[in-house]
Amino acid sequence: MFKNIYVYNSMIKSFTMSSRVKDAVSIYNEARVIGLRPNSYTVPFLLKGVIRLGKCGLSLGKGIRCEAIIIGLSNNVDVRLAFVKMYASCGCVSDARKVFDEMRVRDLTIWNAMMSGYCKAGEVDKARDLFDVMPERNVVSWTALITGYVHANKACEAVDIFRRMELNGVQPDEVTLLVVLSACAQLGALELGESIHCYVNENNLRKSVSLENALIDMYAKSGNINKAMEVFENMKDRCVITWTTAIAGLALHGFAKEALNMFSRMEKARVKPNDVTLIAVLSACSHGGLAESGRWYFNNLFQRYGVKPRIEHYGCMIDLLCQAGCLLEAQEVLNMMPFEPNAAIWGSILAASRLYKNVKLGEKALGQLMRLEPRNSGNFSLLSNLYADEGHWNESGLIRKAMRENGVKKIAGASCIELDSRVHEFISGIRSHIQSEEILEVLVLLSRQMVVTNIHI
Image 1: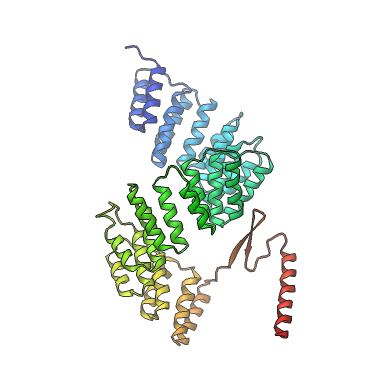
Image 2: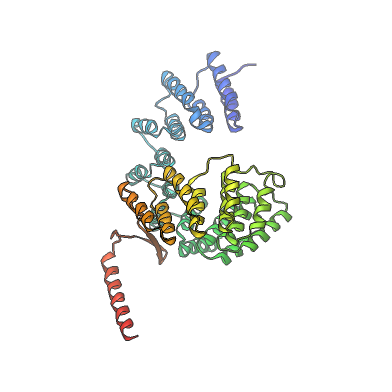
């Protein structure tokens, strides 16, 4: 049978799409052995498979680039775009930038790919610099930057970019809305989340399961659990993420029994729970002080639900036992863990030590936390307060002294306020807000008024 490069391209594309990367590489090598010259389609098809391999495919990707240079394909726009995406996906964003900078002609797709690469690498400031000098932008450009800020835990900046996007008349797509709803959930920005929900309804956008899941999560984390449940109940189709999000939302608001009832409904609906679902269930038991229920679910994780316990499951169980005052049992679970306890687990034990006046256990927990989180002032404060509660003033003072000597400073308090769908962040001791002077003047007036009121009382 006569074979040409187009036949091989089709085979490479087919293998790549079905995640059979090794087979795609074998076909590519076979084409080279019989003397066929790859074209501008061959390399991008093959690099899509390399991208699926992530960092493991970097050496293969570099080898393909060397061949592309040798056969004269390195200047092709589609080939260069493929290399930018490949390097960015493999974590080599600096190499992606070199390819980008070498290009004389760059279309919008190339700019978006480079910016997305920075965002995926966590270099959101560089992504912003690139975004600001882009000759043109589309919804993909805006969404990529918003996503970068959300992944960098800079939800306020993400919301600001979304607002700029609206002012520029760019219509968000489903991906944009999903990301912005995630930012709203992080900030508890209920007003903005509600406006996005209204936008979806008014524009008759398709309500995918993912979008409705995001709405449930946003409403739950922003304080409106009733609205979250309303979205849930009105859904025609639900997946495991839908049920898990609803259970976690109810647990977050202290509706432990309702969360467990929701889990029972999930089982009756024959939706198989995953490991995250069981974390939400154990969290509900912890929030509601349902020790017996928590023990049952924890002991049946694998036998009944086929879930291999993760450190998060152990953490929920230990936190539940600590809150219930079962410190001895909590230590037994801690000792049987096949994992190294993390800071969250030792933090639960330290907090319970203060609550139940167990100085010895508190000292042990702090020792571990100093190793895991040597700069966390909250851990020192908890043990210092425990000593003070027990009248051990000398020990309490020594903890405070150790904090000073080790340069451990208290983390500044921060709060967010949403006003007119805009989130304002305030950090203790920092006057970075544009209206900080006016706000301080009002606070002074309020303080004086309170003093006057107290005098009259």
